[in-house]
Structures are given as C-alpha cells and as structure tokens.
Length: 473
Image (tube, rainbow, N blue to C red; front, side, top):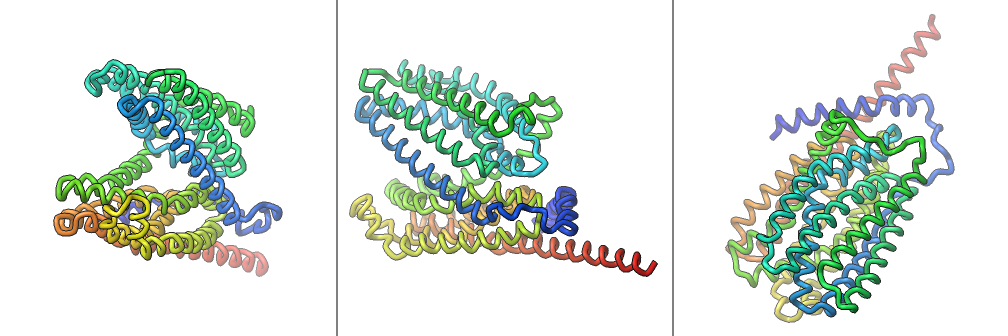
C-alpha cells in the first residue's frame, strides 16, 4: 500500500503540474484578471448545495407520492411487480454509469473542457455497454419473473434503463455548469411531477404495470429532448455534440474507470452491513440495522447536497488557481463539519426516542446502532469532502485505494463484532472503517497544499531572480 500510494502521488503531482501550468503562470503575472463582480467560490457552493437539497427533497416527495398512488391503486401484488420492473431498470442504469456521473461534472468544469466531446464520448461509452447488458436482461426476463405481466414490464425496463443512462450523461454534464444547475434541476423536477400526474391518471383508469413502465420511459425520452434544447442554449454551435473516434472513446473510458471503481466500492460499503448481518446474525438484527440506516440516510441529505455543489466549483478553481482551490476547500470543509455536527449530535442524543417515534417501540433496541451511526457521520462526511477535493485535483486513484482500504477494514471488523453485538456491531464497524482512513486522507490533502505553496514560492523566487539579473545587466 505505501509503495502504491507513493507512485499514485507522483502521477497525480505530474498531472497536476501539466494541468496547472497555465493557471499558475496567470496567477503569478495576472493576479487580478478574474472578474470582480463574480460570485465567490464558497457562495457558489452554497447556492448549488441549496439547489440540490431543494431538488432532492422535492423529487423524494414526488417519488413517495408516486409509490403511494400506484400502491393504493394497483394493490400489493401488482405494486410489487412494478417495483421489481423499475428496480431492474434502475440497476441497468447504475451498472452502465461507468463513472461518468462524477467524471463529467469534474472535467466539464475545467476552463479548457470540450463539452461536446465529453458528452458524445460518454453517450457512446454507455451505449457500448447498454447493448449487450440490455440484450441479456431482455432474454433473462422469463427467469427473473414467472408471470407474464412482470416479464413484459422487465423487458420494457430495458428501454427505461437505457434512456435513464442516456439522460444521465446530460444531467451529469450540466452539473459542471453552476449557472445552469438550478434550471436543469427545475426541469428534472417538473418532469418527475408530470410523471406523477400521468401515472395517477393511468393507474386510476385501470392500466397495468407495462403502461406505467412505458410512461416512465417516455418521460426519460422527454428529458433527453429537454437536455438537447438546454445544451444548445448553453453551448450553442461553438461546441456541438461530437461523435468520438474509437480511440477517444477508449481513452475516455480509461479516465472514467477509477470513478466507476469508487462507485462500486461505495455501493458495496452501503450494502455489506445488512448482507453480513443476514449471515452472521438474526433477521431481527437486519431489520433494526435497516431502520437505523434509514434515519442515517436522512442525516446525509444536507452533506450530500453540499458534495454535489462543491465538485464543479472546486474543479474549476483547481484548473484556474490551485492555491485558491485549497482556500475554498478549507472554508468548505469548515462549513461541512459545522453542518455535520448540527445533524449528528441530535441523532446521538435522541436515538432511542427517534426510532420509537418513526418505527415503533419494537425498534428502540436499535438506539445504540443509530448512536454509532451518528458518531460515524463526522469522519465519514469529512472523508467524503476530502475525496471530492481529490477528485477535483485529479487524484481519483488515491481515493479508490483508501476507499477500498476502509471497506476491507469494515468487513474485518464486522466479522468480529456482528456475532457479538449484531446491528450495533455493524454500526461500530462502519465507524472504525471511516476513522481508519481519516488521517491518511487528511495528510494527502495537506501534502498537496504544501507542494502547491512550495511550487508557487519557487516560481516567485525564479521570477525575482530573473528581474534582478535584468536590472544588473
């Protein structure tokens, strides 16, 4: 691990020097070239975070209302079929992500980004994976489900998953443009509301699972159309969507692989607790842990919105002025810690009453697990903030390595603690895994800051030396 970490650090520093050469020179000779009327980076992060949080809350409420309408209208059995079909479609979308959900916001925020090439490459890359995966899912539908309605719904889910993955490229790219984020989020929320209204009409008219899945596909196609219109408005003819060559597509996929690996590790980390509990403990412990996890998910809403707002801003700042990017990250990290403490302390203080209020008296046994999740929230969120900065700095391979290390530590701790403490042991294991990588990630960020200060000081020294030589001559 140390040797690999060192080699990754060297590659990262070399890449940072190549990317930041022009920005560093502009910073030394033209310190005041940036517009005075522009919004400060931290203010932009706050604005974007508020937009993402509002959108997440609104779309979460719409999704809940949609499930409520369909569940009450179709009944338990047909509602279960609808959930099965949409879950398979969602899984296809997630598998086809290939890491572009993070790569596009990061690279699209660079001042020298070619947005048409990025979008075209992402669409082509996802299409290469969607065609074989969709064919397998279509053919395997009779093995996934037994009844004809579910089989038809799963096959339509192939289209739903593919259109969702295609629109995801537009959504991810627009998240790199802070000025367009509120507009895009409003459009996405409006289409979700339209799906809710149309689904309500269809369900009350007696439509089954397949028409509802088809409607969701049509909504995704409409979102793609909206994305094309917004892209033309944002970038116009100066940066049209381009069809990439095979070599360009392969290069883009290679750049996205670390982000895909990081997403895979995060998904395993989120699911390893209940999966191992199911094997090492009782179903009751799985249920208690799931209830505590749902409460923990709510606690992450505000930090998650802050991460979404921070990535494009930090990436853009790092491409222009790396010292300013470090200063922005420092302010962002302090705000992140304050928000996390404001959320985590109540969870630790009122874990038992909260679980009784939400789930009932039977779940009050999960209070210790929820308390430990609240304790784990601070290192987990600060670690995620550092990962966002390292993503912006082009150090995604380091993020993957330390995320994998945290997962391995969590699994080892779970194997020891779950047989003894059940759901509480699972929560403690999560805290141990995040705490174990807290210092290494902090050291990595500080190391990059110190190297940037030294690099800038060296440039200033050379500049002054050249001026002195000229004056002497």
